[in-house]
Length: 385
View 1 (cartoon, rainbow, N blue to C red):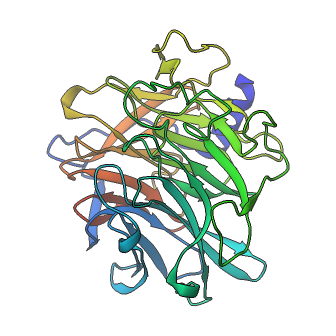
View 2 (spheres, rainbow, N blue to C red):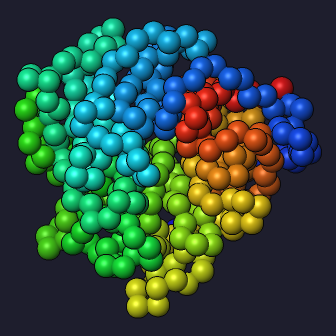
């Protein structure tokens, strides 16, 4: 298994194992540049629908989605669900994904409703990138998940290399996984889920199929793809189908993990990321099973004002020439962005991309660029050289 991990990571990181650059403590290394493009208050996600588009979508926690040109010009607002959510704490509009449905496009959003529960809803999308208004102006709810506490709602939603929808959920909240949900395969919390949404405009919360290949069956929840997560705010698939997950830690350790694709399956199938038996590589809840865990390749403590990992983008020759094969992440409290090279099991080297960036909410990549977002609304493009 370890050889397969190394081979998969090597496919992503080949040719990028040179020495790291010196760090300029006043900010980014002189060869790193962060170009401010726009400001969307509450920015938490930035998504590309298709590499052929000349625009991207910026998601605001407040409940709006805007289209932005590649140079940062605001084009239009395509979605407004501010009446359906509350942007407070870890709640609000949290994620967006697109997928093809035959010749057409559809969009999926992850948000918390007025009761604080997780909702996955869909919209039809026109070829020009605008959203089709739903009948009676109500969202088509594909999935609804009860949330017992106000925090740890996850937020990421991604279309996988298999065109299935992947949803990251937190462990339900409070602290320390009090009801031990993260490793409980009877609960949808603390997981990555894999579903095939129905193409409906009137969904009521149970409008999806279970795709072939999911690793769990009754009495476990068959939606489950991966287990053992605390608050996976952001995860991503690279071009080889490997999964990269940044999981927000408890009191001491932030972490990121690499789960390689296996055969025809995307990364993460049946993977146990360890929480709450482990926080990073340290034992946490001793009453939880400790074996069969994928350990993180990256972990860091809360020294220097760090508190919460904001993952994470995998760089390529096209989206960041000169620094391909890196995993770039930020920290929400410290306002720092870091690029690391890894073999999938450990960090080989790291370098600071930028400092003083405020509350970093996400580092995200499209086919053309890598971006840093902050809760104040700043959208910055990362450049090198």
